[in-house]
Image (cartoon, rainbow, N blue to C red; front, side, top):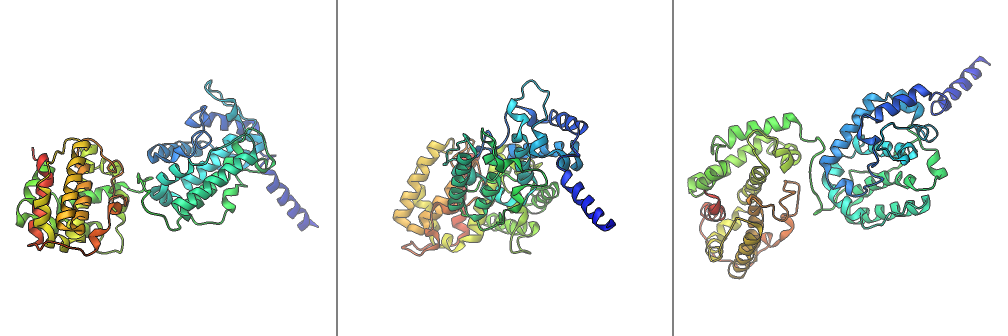
Length: 442
C-alpha cells in the first residue's frame, strides 16, 4: 500500500510540474527576464519574419545570444513549471512597446522554436542551406487565419524546401514549422497541450544532417569558427604565406611575385604548406578552412582590415587552389593561347560593369580560339578575380570555400576538346595572374 501511495504521489508531482507549481513569483521572474531582452518587444522572430529570418545568420546569432541571456535569467525549474499554454498566456510584459499578442501562447512557441534553432543539431544545416531555406520557403504564402490554414502553409513550405534544398533542410523546416501553426489568430486544441516539457519538435524523427543540394549555400558561421581557429589561421599565414610575401601591401606584392617564374613556384609551394598547417594534408576534409574561410570570419583576423581585404584573401586562396592544385595540366597545355586571346580584350577592374564586359569578351575569345576547357578555366578564374574589386560583384558577397557557385559556372574544364599546344604551367599561371591583377598594382 505504501509503495502504491509513493507511485501515485510521484505521478501527481510529475503531472503537476506544468501547472500546480507555477506561481506569481515565477511569472513575475519570467516577465522581468523577458523585459531585459529583445523578445518582449512587438516583433517576435519566426512569427513575423519567417522565412526571411534565415537570410542573415549574423542577426540570427544575435537572437540566440539574447535567448542565452533569457535562459540564464529564467531557471530550468521555472521553465518546467510555467512554460505551458495555461501559464504563459497570463504573463504580462511591462514595456509600453509590447504587443498584446506577446502575452499569449505565441511567446511559448517562439521560445521553443529558438530552443531548437539555437541549441538543436542545426549548425550544419543552417551554415549550408539557410539561404535556400529562406528563399524557397518564401514561395508559400502563410495564412494565419486559423490553425488549419497555417498548418497547410507550413506543409507547403516544408515540401518546397525538401524538394529544392534537400532532405536535411526539409527536416529542419518541418521541425521549425510544426510550431508555426500556433501563431494562428484563433486558438486551437493542438497548441494548448504544448509546453516546455511537451515539445512536439522532439518527437519528429528526421535527420537535419542528411545530404544537401548544391548551389544554394551562403555561409556565415554560427560560432563555428572559434578564436582558436582564427589564431591558427593567423599563425599559418605568418609562417607559410607572409614569410614568402609580407602582409603589408600583400596584394601588390603578390602581383609582383607571380610575374616571376621562380616566385610563382614558391607561391604554389606556400599554398601547399598553408594547407598542411591548417590540416588538409592530414585529414580527408579541412574543417578550419570550411568553417572560417568566409568574409565574415576573415574580417576578424588581425591581418585583414576590411571586407575588400577579406574577399581578396579568400579569392586569392581559391585562385591558387584552382590553378596550383586542381587544373595544372590545363594550364600547361593552354597558357599561351589563353593569355594571348584574353589580352585582346580591354580590362577594367574598377567596377562590376566594366569588369563584366572584359570577362565576357575574354571568355568568348578564349572559348572560340583556345577551346572549351580553356574558356571554362578563364570564366572561373576571372569570376573569382571580380571579388577583388571594391564594388561587390555577383557571388562575391557570399565568397567562401563552401560556396559552389563558382564551381558551377561551367564544367568544360574537366572535359577534353580542341586546344592549342602550350609550354609550361609556371609561365601560364604567371601570365594570367599578372595580367588579371595588373590594374590593382598601384
